[in-house]
Length: 258
Image (cartoon, rainbow, N blue to C red; front, side, top):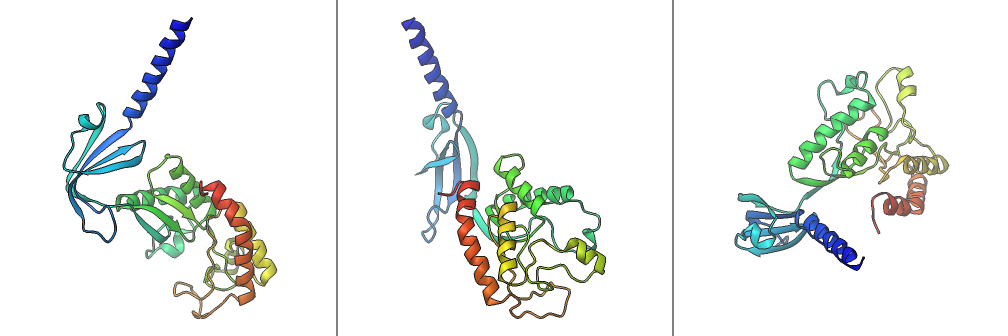
């Protein structure tokens, strides 16, 4: 019995060791920006274990000298730097001549798939974290969660969903027939501090990582409302107060923040 336990323990320990060894990558980089502000390094070896950078060493170290089963990524002709962050993106689409009419034919499911396409392009451009500041809530939250679960390639996404805006202001729907104005008005449009409190709570309930406020007018609004302040100070104060009361829990629980 003791021999069996010892044998099982040895096999178990070997299995863990093998699993750990299988997740070791060695990158041979021609250039590396390791510390922002410092001069780039040349001819460096980056060792990654369990998806975490373990160390960076000068010269090109053979993978077998790091771990017998380590795998090599040859980037001797490439420049390596930390992942970039873009703090204002809209992954679910891009502006075009047909942007105003595309909404008539694009389902939420298709919008999420379009977002997956642009998320991959953004990742391939070197951006590993983005903040999506306005888009269909269901589609962008689904995309965010799919990326987090490694179902689709893309950068880590912090999403705002629908922006909080004043009725008729930048962020509200405009420029179309009245029937569609009523149908497509976001649920985060609010007037007065009490409505704005409820709108902030609604956004957080639906899964927002951030609260986006379109406090002023914007050049892309199809109205003549200008670009001055549109949301009043008491509305803005209530939104901030509400977000502070709820978003700490949302961020810490939803995205692993401590």
